[in-house]
Each structure stands twice: as structure tokens, then as C-alpha cells.
Image 1 (tube, rainbow, N blue to C red):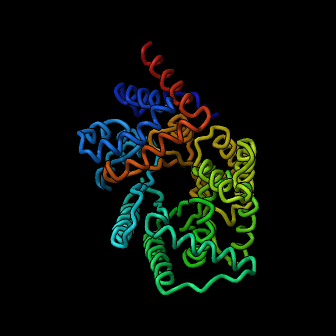
Image 2: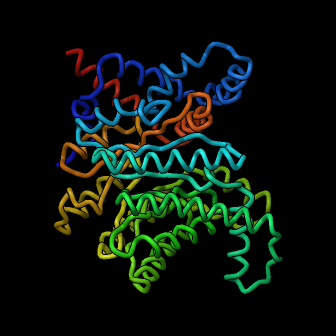
Image 3: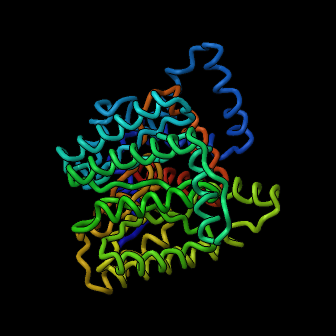
Length: 397
């Protein structure tokens, strides 16, 4: 029987200094006003060339990131693997806008795929389409696809728009082709609903191309959207018809406040579930549907929710599916929810950690957003703190 309260297993990879650093960080993250101030003051301090980069690297960066380069992540990959936990290398540099920057990011993503091919401790690769593409081109294509599905005329794209979208597709295909060549499973991350339509379509196109004999490409489905359970079921039927395997990274979602604010501002119905209970219900229902259709689906349950993690473990046991079946994975972020990751791994389940990497200055937007999200997730920070305090007390006996 799995117990997510077992802190001895949860923190057995952490020494006294690691525990204390994590405790202090989650204490700070527990103060929303302080986090909001940090989001403004930290980039300002860096722009003024104040000597804080070293402090950032020793604290929040060390807690949530593997290193500044792929090679710097080797230590993290090794220590996670020592406890039966895989690594998902996530190049977490954001905000790029130039074509040469998109090309550099594409090359780094392919390097993570190539590293995975030579290291069994790296079961997946991952990328965000906005990391390799102009945001407005993705939104334009999403608008065009939605209009087409509604039978509404959409204006003719100009040459610049056509070439921009073509360039995005070429980069996506290069990444997916590399994943297929190296037999590396690849997550394409979900993003805001108003650009997700194009991402969903491009991802499915890649599945039709590369998921004919095995599951290589995974779509990310955010269950805090009220339409995603129906979407998952429709995708299953489409995959059956096309004779392909369908990979799912199942998450709750990360853009709730932004989505609701935009819907209110522009006067359209919010795509977000009415409450957390609805999200939880649909997430667990999606797990049940995926397990029931395991001939089509492979899934990585990307969740920090104990109930959903336990639900999938129970489903696998009930259906007599081997805990080591590569079709079924659990994943959490590095530096968070170790009580889920390590206890699942100890019980024999397939687990991986998202390991962000990139130059400190360029990963900072990701880190600050992660801290902000922690303050808005009910109970997340207090749960982390409570478990850390429990382990510190246990070791003090």
C-alpha cells in the first residue's frame, strides 16, 4: 500500500542542507505579496547588474532546475535515477522572438532527444511550440482552423504569414522526426486556449506521421478546461479510425487566471471549469477512460495531486496492469511533491521528474511564474512545508 505521508522515503535523497533550503524557499513562496514583489524586483536587479545571480543559482534555481546546460544536468539525472526516477529535460527559456533564437532552441531540444537515446534514465523529451515560433502565427492559424470547422470564411493569408506558419511546421517536424529516429517519447506542451487549436492539430498531424507503430508523440491535455474530457474521447475515436497510437500527457493546467481574465475582457464564455471539484472529476474520469482504452493510449499523469496519483495506481492494480508498463507514467516537477514521486517509485511505478534547465537569467521568468503558481494552488505550499517539517522532526529524534 502506497503512503504519500512516508517522509523517510520522500526525502531520502536529501541531506540536512537540502531540507533546510527547501523549507526556507517554501516559507518564502508561502507569502504571496513577497512573491509578487520578487517578480518585479528580481528582473530589475538583474537589469541593473546587481550581484544577485549567484544567490538565485544557489537557492530557487538549485531547488527547481537541473543546471544551465544539458551537461550540467548530469548530476540531477544520476541522483534521480539512483532512486528509480527518470528525468524529462525541459529547456525552460522563454520570451524569444527572433528566428535565429527559435532555431537555437530547436537545436537544443533535439540535443535533449539525442541524449535520451543514449541514457535510459531520460524516458521523455519535451518542448513548447511558443519556444520555437512567433506567438501571433500560432494564434492566426488557430483562428483559421476554428473558422474552417465552423464553415466560416477566413481571410487569405499573406506571404509572410504563410512562410511563418510553414517555418513553425518545419521545426516541429524536425523535432518529431528526431524523436522517432531515436525512439524517444516526446511531449508537446499545451498552452493558452486561444492558440491551442493549432497546437492540437499540428500535434495530431505528427502523431499520424510518427505514431503508426509505437507511441512517440504525446499531446498535452489540460483538464481545467471544461471541454477536454469530450475532446479526449473524440481524439480516441479519431486515432482508432486512423490506426495510430495516441500519447497523452494529462495535466490540470497552468493558465487559469489568464484564461478567465481574457474571456471576461473579450466577452466570450470562459473555457475554464467552474470549480476545482469539476477539474478533479474530469481528470480522474480521463484516467479511467485512458486505462479502459489502453490499446490506443499511452499516458503520463503529470500531477501534484495525491488523490489522482493514487487513483491511477489503483486503476492499474485493478486492471492487473504491470506497474512497470511503459504506457503508464507519473510525473512531477523537480523540487516539488517528492512525497508523491519517491513513494510511487519505491512502490514500483514508473515515475519521472520534469527537470528545467537553461541560463539562470533566461530561466528566471519560468522560476518566478512557478513560485507565483505555487501561491495560488490551494494547500500546495503548506503541504510541502508540513512534510518538510515532519521529516526534519523525524531526523532529529
